[in-house]
Amino acid sequence: MKTCHRFASIKAEFERDVSFLHGHAERHRGSASAKTSAKNAVSVKRNMARALSTHLDRCRECG
Image 1 (cartoon, one colour):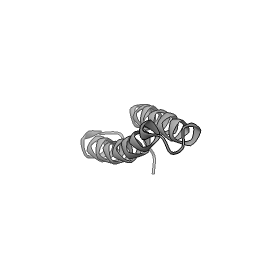
Image 2 (cartoon, rainbow, N blue to C red):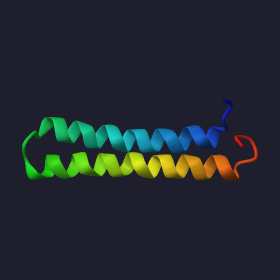
Image 3 (cartoon, rainbow, N blue to C red):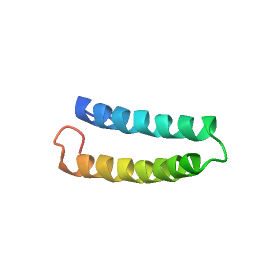
Image 4 (cartoon, rainbow, N blue to C red):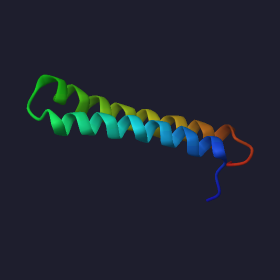
């Protein structure tokens, strides 16, 4: 599937946030902030899926 540059930038931004949250959760295992970061990472992944799906529906290049 061919996608536009905007799709790639949206995906990269979300993946950067997810990796940051996962990294924080790994570094601070067992702490309350690590648990919150892990939950937030799941939420960010869900938001990424929603944003990319919406983008595909509306973009002339991708959809």
